[in-house]
Image (cartoon, rainbow, N blue to C red):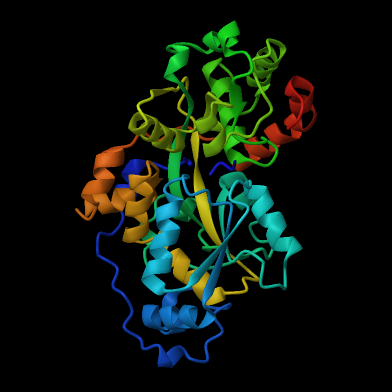
Length: 378
């Protein structure tokens, strides 16, 4: 599984943005009939939204990757896009990591199979900035996206939603009140981490969360790694990538993962008459980020996807999935936040602490040898 749900920046600063509602372009589709959509950096350069929609319908397809349907409500996002614009959406490797998204784009470059868009963790986003991997594109809501200016003012990547890490677990195991509870023999063969920390933001943030709870810092994750080594030695940690299926089957009854994913599991389990709980030992999170591939085979659809997901419709879909859209502060301030979104994530969010790109890179350099030594490999 990928990390896919905070970065530095203050809520107060976000509240200070201009409050004018961005207007849709009224440019005609015909005005953009000869537009090279792989080069446009905003909708107005391609005949406005009408031109973008017409061009996408002509392309007829969008390629996405690493978007599990249960992740931040991406199932509804994909279906909504297909229904709204009448184009096919090809979905590749839904359980892939952020790094695997980029790898797939490079491997399939020049073919119709290459991903058009990415949904990637911050560390991977920053790693590939200014390398020619992403095509700069700013949606009509871009200036209202929290953290956008601080992450990438050029618009190569746009922060899309945030979340806080947690530990989700079956209520049949009792109640977890402290990390050392996970060393109990009753957790033997039951604890899984969402992905490989060398490529997955979720896994990396899971280690950061445990490390912080034990008094560690983003500059030194040894405490977190030592704790996972204890879990492995006790036989409690398993090298299984948790998915919706492994949770439902009981193979991974304890999952260190994004809180918005686990909130969805709580609801699904409740509907099945079961109890799923969450324990959050420390507030650690990150943004996920959207980007257009520089060699997207369907460049108009790629940009239309950005407009759809980073607009009000997409924000509502992410919010009802438990993720906090980066457009959320603006939507609340302007009274445009949906009732469904507010019911799901509330009207105020605490910004979780996050590691910088440099801190994450340093941690991964250490983990390259320390992690396999501590817990083995998947």
